Length: 175
Image (tube, rainbow, N blue to C red; front, side, top):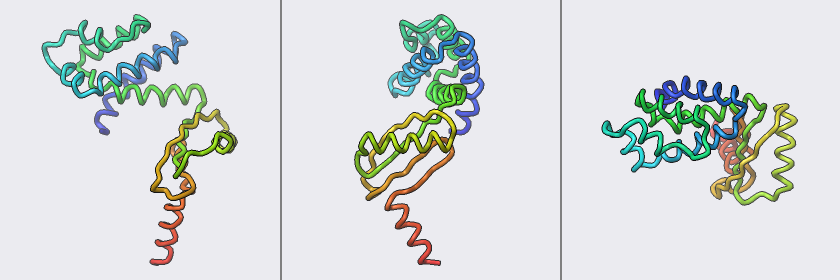
Protein backbone atom coordinates (compact mmCIF):
# COMPACT_ATOMS: atom_id res chain seq x y z
CA UNK A 1 0.00 0.00 0.00
CA UNK A 2 2.70 2.50 0.95
CA UNK A 3 4.64 1.65 -2.19
CA UNK A 4 1.55 2.35 -4.29
CA UNK A 5 1.11 5.70 -2.54
CA UNK A 6 4.76 6.54 -3.12
CA UNK A 7 4.43 5.75 -6.82
CA UNK A 8 1.11 7.58 -7.11
CA UNK A 9 2.19 10.80 -5.36
CA UNK A 10 4.03 12.46 -8.30
CA UNK A 11 1.16 11.65 -10.66
CA UNK A 12 -1.37 13.10 -8.21
CA UNK A 13 0.71 16.27 -7.92
CA UNK A 14 0.92 16.51 -11.71
CA UNK A 15 -2.84 16.04 -12.07
CA UNK A 16 -3.42 18.65 -9.39
CA UNK A 17 -1.10 21.09 -11.17
CA UNK A 18 -2.90 20.60 -14.47
CA UNK A 19 -6.30 21.06 -12.81
CA UNK A 20 -5.13 24.15 -10.93
CA UNK A 21 -3.70 25.73 -14.07
CA UNK A 22 -6.95 25.10 -15.93
CA UNK A 23 -9.10 26.18 -12.97
CA UNK A 24 -10.94 22.86 -13.23
CA UNK A 25 -10.65 21.16 -9.85
CA UNK A 26 -14.18 19.75 -9.97
CA UNK A 27 -13.89 18.44 -13.54
CA UNK A 28 -10.66 16.65 -12.74
CA UNK A 29 -12.17 15.26 -9.52
CA UNK A 30 -15.07 13.79 -11.44
CA UNK A 31 -12.87 12.38 -14.19
CA UNK A 32 -10.31 10.92 -11.78
CA UNK A 33 -13.06 9.50 -9.61
CA UNK A 34 -14.64 7.72 -12.57
CA UNK A 35 -11.30 6.40 -13.84
CA UNK A 36 -10.37 5.23 -10.31
CA UNK A 37 -13.67 3.34 -9.92
CA UNK A 38 -13.14 1.62 -13.27
CA UNK A 39 -9.51 0.78 -12.47
CA UNK A 40 -10.52 -0.66 -9.08
CA UNK A 41 -13.02 -3.05 -10.64
CA UNK A 42 -11.43 -6.54 -10.69
CA UNK A 43 -12.43 -7.27 -14.29
CA UNK A 44 -11.21 -3.90 -15.54
CA UNK A 45 -8.00 -4.22 -13.50
CA UNK A 46 -7.22 -7.51 -15.22
CA UNK A 47 -7.85 -5.91 -18.60
CA UNK A 48 -5.77 -2.81 -17.78
CA UNK A 49 -2.86 -5.00 -16.72
CA UNK A 50 -2.92 -7.02 -19.91
CA UNK A 51 0.15 -6.35 -22.07
CA UNK A 52 -1.87 -6.49 -25.29
CA UNK A 53 -4.09 -3.58 -24.26
CA UNK A 54 -3.10 -0.56 -26.30
CA UNK A 55 -2.71 2.93 -24.94
CA UNK A 56 -5.65 4.36 -26.90
CA UNK A 57 -7.92 1.51 -25.81
CA UNK A 58 -6.97 2.05 -22.17
CA UNK A 59 -7.68 5.77 -22.44
CA UNK A 60 -11.03 5.08 -24.13
CA UNK A 61 -11.97 2.69 -21.32
CA UNK A 62 -11.09 5.14 -18.53
CA UNK A 63 -11.93 8.55 -19.97
CA UNK A 64 -15.17 10.42 -19.43
CA UNK A 65 -16.77 12.02 -22.49
CA UNK A 66 -16.71 15.50 -20.93
CA UNK A 67 -13.08 15.22 -19.75
CA UNK A 68 -10.61 17.81 -21.02
CA UNK A 69 -7.93 16.73 -23.47
CA UNK A 70 -5.31 17.24 -20.77
CA UNK A 71 -6.99 14.49 -18.73
CA UNK A 72 -6.88 12.10 -21.69
CA UNK A 73 -3.20 12.96 -22.15
CA UNK A 74 -2.67 12.26 -18.45
CA UNK A 75 -4.29 8.83 -18.82
CA UNK A 76 -2.11 8.16 -21.87
CA UNK A 77 0.98 8.97 -19.80
CA UNK A 78 -0.17 6.57 -17.09
CA UNK A 79 -0.77 3.90 -19.73
CA UNK A 80 2.68 4.45 -21.26
CA UNK A 81 4.29 4.10 -17.83
CA UNK A 82 2.15 1.09 -16.86
CA UNK A 83 0.68 2.98 -13.90
CA UNK A 84 -3.06 2.72 -14.61
CA UNK A 85 -3.49 0.43 -11.60
CA UNK A 86 -2.49 3.39 -9.40
CA UNK A 87 -5.56 5.42 -10.37
CA UNK A 88 -7.42 4.82 -7.06
CA UNK A 89 -4.41 6.06 -5.07
CA UNK A 90 -3.86 8.97 -7.47
CA UNK A 91 -7.50 10.02 -7.13
CA UNK A 92 -7.32 9.88 -3.32
CA UNK A 93 -4.12 11.93 -3.16
CA UNK A 94 -5.54 14.41 -5.67
CA UNK A 95 -8.60 14.92 -3.45
CA UNK A 96 -6.33 15.59 -0.47
CA UNK A 97 -4.39 18.20 -2.44
CA UNK A 98 -7.63 19.77 -3.66
CA UNK A 99 -9.07 19.95 -0.14
CA UNK A 100 -5.87 21.59 1.11
CA UNK A 101 -5.90 24.14 -1.72
CA UNK A 102 -9.56 24.95 -1.15
CA UNK A 103 -9.03 25.11 2.65
CA UNK A 104 -11.54 22.34 3.30
CA UNK A 105 -11.37 19.67 5.99
CA UNK A 106 -13.23 16.45 5.30
CA UNK A 107 -14.71 14.88 8.40
CA UNK A 108 -16.37 11.52 8.87
CA UNK A 109 -18.86 11.27 11.73
CA UNK A 110 -19.58 7.66 12.66
CA UNK A 111 -22.41 7.13 15.12
CA UNK A 112 -24.42 4.23 16.51
CA UNK A 113 -27.57 5.50 14.80
CA UNK A 114 -28.47 8.14 12.24
CA UNK A 115 -27.84 11.65 13.54
CA UNK A 116 -30.39 14.42 12.95
CA UNK A 117 -29.34 17.16 10.55
CA UNK A 118 -29.23 19.69 13.40
CA UNK A 119 -26.64 17.62 15.28
CA UNK A 120 -24.51 17.22 12.15
CA UNK A 121 -24.71 20.98 11.60
CA UNK A 122 -23.57 21.54 15.21
CA UNK A 123 -20.63 19.17 14.73
CA UNK A 124 -19.76 20.89 11.46
CA UNK A 125 -19.81 24.33 13.15
CA UNK A 126 -17.62 23.10 16.03
CA UNK A 127 -15.10 21.56 13.62
CA UNK A 128 -15.07 24.72 11.52
CA UNK A 129 -14.25 26.71 14.64
CA UNK A 130 -11.56 24.24 15.72
CA UNK A 131 -9.80 23.98 12.34
CA UNK A 132 -10.52 27.46 11.00
CA UNK A 133 -11.55 25.99 7.65
CA UNK A 134 -14.64 24.92 5.80
CA UNK A 135 -15.74 21.42 6.77
CA UNK A 136 -17.39 18.75 4.64
CA UNK A 137 -19.13 16.19 6.83
CA UNK A 138 -19.82 12.59 5.84
CA UNK A 139 -22.09 10.58 8.13
CA UNK A 140 -21.75 6.83 8.72
CA UNK A 141 -23.44 4.36 11.03
CA UNK A 142 -21.70 1.69 13.12
CA UNK A 143 -24.06 0.05 15.59
CA UNK A 144 -21.14 -1.48 17.49
CA UNK A 145 -20.37 1.97 18.95
CA UNK A 146 -23.41 1.49 21.24
CA UNK A 147 -23.88 5.26 21.59
CA UNK A 148 -22.12 8.55 20.93
CA UNK A 149 -19.94 9.16 17.89
CA UNK A 150 -16.41 8.99 16.50
CA UNK A 151 -15.28 11.98 14.46
CA UNK A 152 -12.32 11.66 12.10
CA UNK A 153 -11.19 14.93 10.53
CA UNK A 154 -7.82 15.01 8.85
CA UNK A 155 -5.29 13.56 11.29
CA UNK A 156 -7.57 14.17 14.28
CA UNK A 157 -9.83 11.49 15.74
CA UNK A 158 -12.27 12.33 18.51
CA UNK A 159 -13.76 9.22 20.10
CA UNK A 160 -16.89 10.14 22.01
CA UNK A 161 -18.48 6.73 21.57
CA UNK A 162 -19.77 4.67 24.45
CA UNK A 163 -17.64 1.76 23.26
CA UNK A 164 -14.53 3.99 23.43
CA UNK A 165 -15.44 5.27 26.89
CA UNK A 166 -15.97 1.72 28.15
CA UNK A 167 -12.64 0.68 26.68
CA UNK A 168 -10.83 3.57 28.39
CA UNK A 169 -12.57 2.75 31.67
CA UNK A 170 -11.54 -0.89 31.37
CA UNK A 171 -7.93 0.13 30.74
CA UNK A 172 -7.96 2.47 33.74
CA UNK A 173 -9.37 -0.23 36.00
CA UNK A 174 -6.83 -2.78 34.77
CA UNK A 175 -3.91 -0.53 35.75
